[in-house]
Image (cartoon, rainbow, N blue to C red; front, side, top):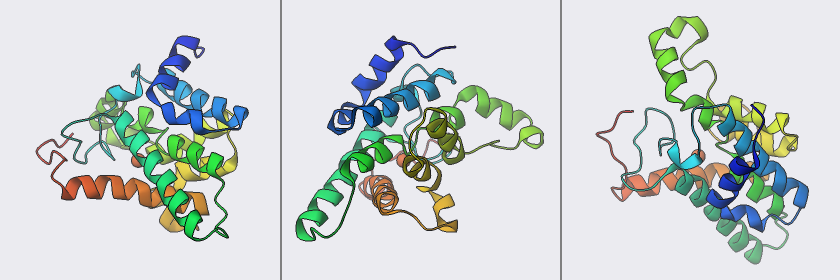
Length: 197
Ligand SMILES: [Fe+2]
């Protein structure tokens, strides 16, 4: 099904940080990536996706997956802004960093889709369980919509897959922002450990 302007507008409203990307092409492709990922799933919005790092890890007690994507993006921007103020020789591409942070979990509509989850649970030896984790599916989405390889790299290697390779500067920031989001909120008692997914 072709991606509609209604869906694009919904993504734009869910991710206001996209307005901080000054490059218009990069800006539009971030919207296109999320709209394409949602369109290929049973979700109608990012906020409908279980608010957790993985389908079976503790979700937020309060808040949505949108809060996660926005939180990681805002943390990544702060890490970059603070450190580049102290060390101007640290060359972070801010536009790219925001696009990377906003797209790091763009594969989640696939991996978290209840229909896919039920299919994989029912027959784990057919296509695997899951067949493809959100990082690999995120790479597929990023490259399909024409995002640069730097963004696809972050989608694919922000998580455990990144331990097998060398992370870029922007990916290192997003990786730590992502882990900080979950670990700090967990330490503060904001994750629901009774919910096993
Ligand atoms: Fe994440």
